[in-house]
Image (cartoon, rainbow, N blue to C red; front, side, top):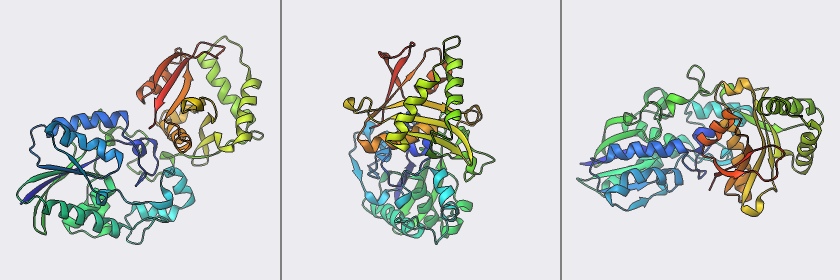
Length: 381
């Protein structure tokens, strides 16, 4: 008999930014790395003879909790990859919900007929991942192995081992937290699920599922939970931009004169050069924020620059602001940038706390600012 421990990867960019990352190669978040440290403690006293992982980065980073402290090599297998979501990859969940609601319904209900354009079906995924797990177990009769894989891949494979059809995955297979652990006992083609999707090693403050503020009544398909983006209209929405800018300025720099014309000209110039450099973050039909990016500034340092990051008070209350950072990453990473920079006042305590929480660090005082600002940077490679 072979014992197989299967772990879901730690919290990754797609989980945090609410973007579709099937086989898109994203990284773990700061919280994901903390989850991996907790997972390592769980496995410190569990003997493993071999460790396998999906070749995608977020799984490789997670697998370190299994192999590194045991001195084992990490072996990669593409059969453990997440579902291939084709043309949906790295698009915001809110955008796909808006443009392809039927497809999104099929995806979320695990429909046997679902297939993202250019992607794979649930049946193809189930067959691929379950057969890969059986193949790896067969290499280690009488031993114990660890496997690092993905959420949909894991639940789809478990449905095979339990004997449930595709359409019953959501009803019969529990949701799995990031770094959740499942255990199988395999003898030939016979598989016993000892336990599934256990996250008892995670304190509540590290659990992804326990801290998803955007959830509403447990319905992850709720449009209000996931943002989508459209270009800002510099003519029809000039007053909107000015209102957001003025509110931020007067909150952070009370008593200092506000130069709305200069701010608007900068935004207009960026929007005319590339409409997607200034975008409105949309929550359904309502504007939840605005993101203004400078696609040229700091490119000599291989960095992208966020000129203005604004989230409406209503969206802040639901923890939606982090999704704008995902849009910035999705903009700058294809341009070859490996970091993102922005400026923040030390008097903006809320903003400073937010940026530090999500991996920005101070590079010191910004040199070209009329008011005292810190230049902040976050790596995205």
